[in-house]
Amino acid sequence: MSKVEAYKIIICQFLAKTLDERTKQNFAAYLDDPDFMEAWQQLIEEGVINEAHDVVGSRSLFDKIRSDERIKEQFVTISEKRNPIIKILKPVGIAALFLFFGVAALLFMFKHPDAEHSVDKITMTQTDSTVLPGSEKAQIVLENGERIDLEQLKNDTVIDNGSFEIVKSAQGTISYRTKAGLPSTLQIAYNTIITPRGGEYKLQLADGTKIWLNAATTLRYPIRFDVHERKIQLQGEAYFEVAKQLYQGKRVPFIVNTGDQQLEVLGTAFNLQNYGHAIVTTLVEGKVKLNFNDKSRQQLYLQPDEQSIFQAVDKKARKITVDPYYFTAWKEGKFAFDKTPLDEVMAMISRWYDVEVLFNYHPENFAFSGTISRYDDINQLLQTIELVGDIHFELKGRRIYVNR
Figure (cartoon, rainbow, N blue to C red):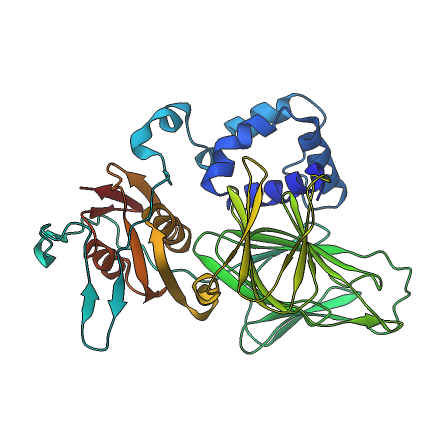
């Protein structure tokens, strides 16, 4: 994926207010990059940015973005970024702390056996009772810039867009139907689906490929595919079941561009996550080939139960063996953890419940194992995590404070 294409995805997330925390912090630095201006201009020409956003053509673009009251909340102030107390996702080590869920009881053990943990210490201060689990909600941005709020669109509805139709099934899944008799020379149009923090959605592409989108995810895709290749762009997390497609007896490749990595599908089912700090590819079935923007880097092939982790900072990729369940359970409505560090646990909770996590205390050598419903009350979820470590959560409005 080119830098301009990557910026286009970020801008779409920016306009939809779905930027992840890391990108929010870096966004101001993008404004002085000529590739950012090029991406902005292309989105105007494609109709994704409407007249209300079209302030390109003068240096005042940057000032208008920074001062727009509608989007100020997207940014983290300099003082906040320098305050280590509220910095999210600090690195931690992993210790062997397990939580097993039984039919009638919770079994757990602590790194410090003499630590006292009681239900009495679990108290949540909540000034806003509106913190709810995520749900099915997303927007589709059409080629002409029109936005469709899928949460407001009734099930079993067909939207006619001239050369194609968008269908919302009785079960709520979005799919596309192209109309018969269209000339092969017709320009391929792109749509973008965006799930906010606290949202998820299921999409079926024109070729029959099924995609589950997790919270805070942007997917750009054509309404119909070229006969020679199928190419889409992802930022966030999604699970794919790729449909096989042949043209003149040859397999039509399915390619997912995300950041510095390009994935070519040689199989069917995989999970792909890219929230900024790393690109994590987990293969469930079949086979995939990974290419990287750094041409000196060798291709990487994955077999079932293998995972690639490509770090954004050092541009290095490593391959490990995993149980895919822990990386795909989200699409079945569950959080599944296996010795997962606290920062990663809280990052998932932050995206799904659309809350901010602030660390006043970060325990060392803490990890969590277990399976929990993604639709549990947030207080119950936090209480469960408190039971396995020397930590205490305080919920105030839409902020979770991690205390000792």
